[in-house]
Amino acid sequence: MTSRKLEGKVAILTGGARGIGVHYSRALAQEGARVAIFDLADGENLAADINSVEGRDAARFFRVDVSDESAVRAGIASVAAWAGDVGILVNNAAVFATLGDVRVTELDVDLWDKVMAVNVRGPFLMVKHVAPMMIGKGAGKIVNISSGSAYKGLAFMSHYVTSKGAMLGFTRALARELGAHNLNINSLAPGLIMSDSISANQEHLDTNRDRVVASRALKRDGYPEDLLGGLIFLCSSDSDFMTGQTLLVDGGSVNI
Image (tube, rainbow, N blue to C red; front, side, top):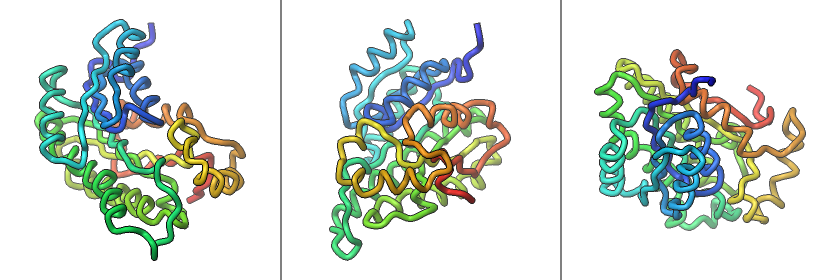
């Protein structure tokens, strides 16, 4: 039997109960990790299904608002009580699929703040409270989910693109700060991915889908399965000498 790349590891995946996060949850478990699924959407059935497939206590759901520091602290403590110290953190939770196109001159301040609270404050709070475990063990993998749009820009989505650009800077700063403790911090930057969540936002697809596919070297839609190899690479020992980097998985739309 081929050894699994994440055997014995404990992973927290934020935003793991819906959209692309569901695929991330399954992939982490399939590679041997015990996966704590943090989300506000219900993930109980997903965790039960993963456990049934794996035949072990491979996944648990924790209802956590990543923008709330007390909720983050309590959730991480619950994960440690369940499975032990966390060795992998994937900051995937984000406001995106429900966003409609909006001109920056018409963007409501409360919406801007909501996007920043989840997409930027959330990863910060998760790192703040998970990193001490990793520092104590002298090892850890943190994967921040950015976006190809942070490189290209995207009209009428300035709130989202700004938040994903922040993940690039956050990753680089963390890599410098935490490298002395042997922590690897990298970003995974997908292009437009046809997940269940984005498929429900027809306005965004009507505006962007054809244009995005035309911009790619590989002329097709992207799917959640296209991201899983990159995710597991960044979470596993295969990336042990890589930090502060961004892995773009977008069919060649961004060419840098």
